[in-house]
Image (tube, rainbow, N blue to C red; front, side, top):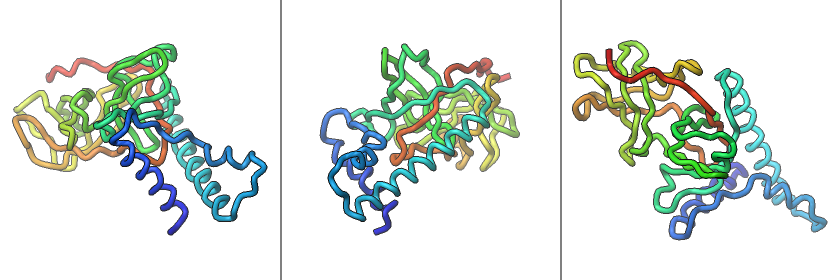
Length: 229
């Protein structure tokens, strides 16, 4: 089995096994690397796995840095430290909170794009709802038809709730965040016809990657009213 596949399988097994336990603790980054500092000799396979893990981690961080530069807005780096039990697929806990000026409704991004939204904060931690979580409420606008609405979740999927019935978005039309600061960011594409009144299925550009605990938080942003003109 390739080393990258082995490492990815390890993370996935940790998540599945911990579904029946308390809050799911995220494996600490570089924990494998730290073992190299011990005097105990390591087998070649162990060292290869460690090197592969470090390479993968470095790749994630480089992509995250590039995204941070592209956004050109104030961001704060954070680390996922746990999952909420029984809802690990759509709720995450990070190691930044009120003391770090994290505010509710701030946007969470990984190296591929927006993955969720801060819904509650405490002194040293915050709770993120992913895009398929009903608690997520991100103001959006369709790129071409200029239809305003809200991106939210149904637990099993992500949807766009348009604030008008007079127009319909195009199939595969991009959905942009309704930000004035920073610039609008792509968040997904309309992938299905109207499912309910003014509701459309969305395919997010980015999804949570269980192999990387690093994310960015947009510390502050402003958006105009989502009232349809």
